[in-house]
Length: 417
Image (cartoon, rainbow, N blue to C red; front, side, top):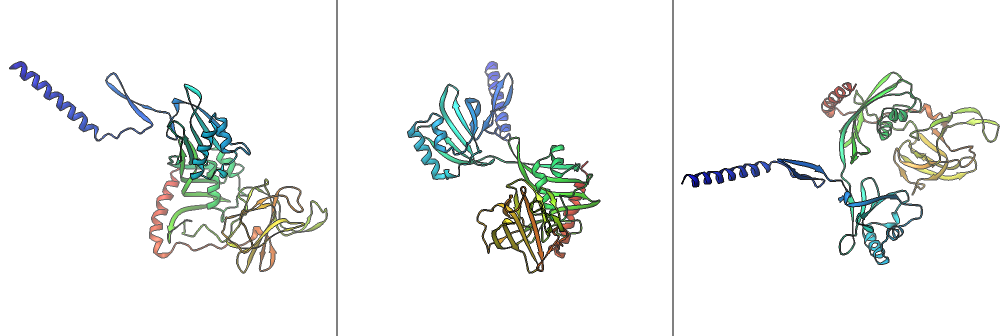
């Protein structure tokens, strides 16, 4: 009886321990598909499975390439040792969910070959963007094709930098994302002249940055920033008013202005506004009532404000150009374009910051640049002295909520060292 009692007690203890183990395991989340558990002695070890696009990569020999000029989807499939019937079937299925005419040169694609059969293709991934991809699966009875999106991880980041030469170079020197320079230039476009930054100007920023795996794909949102320029401290706080997110300064004034400071994000002024300038081609002195911005051919040109396209034409001296009427007072002209933005037409309404064309050297030009001109009440004026009134500030009913946001983010900016 004693032996039976001991045996029963032992069995009971085992059941109790099993119950405790399984009960406690209910609160432990199952590992993601990119991990697996294996036993080693008395311990459970969590290992990572190398995985991308839902494919376990260590099971395949992976070849990464880029689309060549005039190379099409069928060419790639044929070169990957698919039969003509497979090429036709995959192409047809792919075209049903993705326009293969949008297959772009320079885009990356990956080929996954079986390690035991080097000529047998298992998967093909075409990356249409850092996020979107086309996945061809060849491991089943018949090929399957689907569109997918890579998982994005958003990280909270902060930045601090002091200008030595340019905002762009400061990003490089401080190992900061290049896109942060573009985002800051957008926010401060109406208040900071990025063509005339002083050595010693500085900035701080708190922002969300998006990553795929460990690769940054750009800034999602700047929450708050501080820019010291010409000795002035300029804050930018992101705040939602009337269902629209915008940026406001410390006093609650909008950082958005009626006009951008410049139609180009990054370039240099090669020739200023003058009543008597030696023309580089004609070799005579004549007025130059505009500002020349030297920039590489193809650099996007942005409308400095909302308006209507009233001219889109070609002139012997100006080359291809666009003229925009912004209101009853101001009009702007953009000369020497290499080409217009796609779909741009006379009578079309354009928004501030919208791309209207690209830098070129058409007309009388010794090199690629933008000749930018401004009319005020029918007379040409110096674009660099153009007034730019602010838009609506924080409303009285939003003052309390904005003050809370301002205090919180200002304290966070101050803590960045």
